[in-house]
Image 1 (cartoon, rainbow over the protein chains, first blue to last red):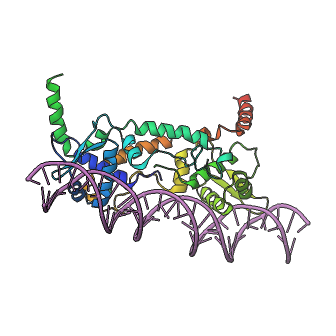
Image 2 (cartoon, chains in turn purple, red, green, orange; image 1 turned 30 degrees about the vertical axis):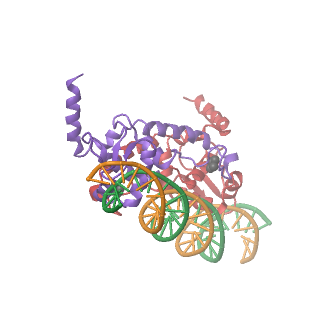
Image 3 (tube, rainbow over the protein chains, first blue to last red; image 1 turned 45 degrees about the vertical axis):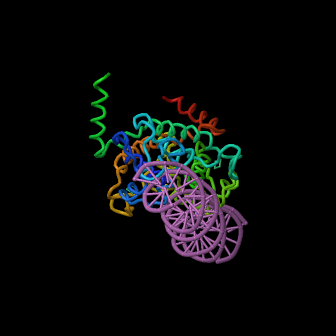
Length: 152
Length: 152
DNA sequence: TTATCGCCGATTAATTTAGTCGGACATAAT
DNA sequence: ATTATGTCCGACTAAATTAATCGGCGATAA
Ligand code: FES
Ligand code: FES
């Protein structure tokens, strides 16, 4: 049903949690886990993946945690999905690898690849702030914007 | 990974098989199954579902089979997906039913529903002929169009 | 030097998707 | 009428994917 994975859900929540925070704020796994009732161990894994992909930045040791590593207004939903779930693919039979028994006579593959590309473009045009904007952090955001508008 | 189900794949292949056929042509499950190497029993199920949704029309008895029940230039990919896989939903937590343990404090649900709606609109604007056009049936199609162009 | 954090591989459990089985009903041809 | 060939339908098993857990390591601020 073209569903996003629960992992992606969690990832987006975590990113949202970190977005538009004060300089120096560190989000740790436990806090996020408790805030959203996400299983700790699983969230840890997800954050590690995000970190490995540079989407968030890790700070080790006690009082450590994570910081958002990208600009919510530049970074897109498509990239988050790819980081967590791997490449976006509507069709399952990729050229070369793991071809299904239909690959030879499949008539719908080529046209679906084009549609898939449009889907990817669509997701790559949805910035993270579209998702983060609808909650309380919006106030902080406005404050930040107000500041940066002083020196145009 | 926003993947389409194999069932949908099969459904699209079958629809493609039936599209732009001569008046009176009946496609039977066995033929389609052998042409594309789709497991017979499974294809049968899929065709029954399509039939129940009016996408194809069934003709019982020997020499029976199926006929396309919709206009490939009017009918969309979104409707096929819905017929086979149920409603398109990126997010898994639907209001009321089966709420996950995050529903209460989930910050990403509302914005994702909007994005999901855009996705649905996108799929509802892709007509079946976009998928069927890229193969040999195109000749037949042109012939049909040529005929109908005689009397504008 | 220790308690608190992130890091990682492997494993198990749950859910979803794929494919199968067995038997009913419809009908055209013999 | 009987038969062969087709659709129809529910329940079932198998495979694949996703969700969640476990156990132990490494970094570092207090
Ligand atoms: S179903 Fe595998 S290539 Fe189309
Ligand atoms: S994860 Fe269930 S509502 Fe968002």
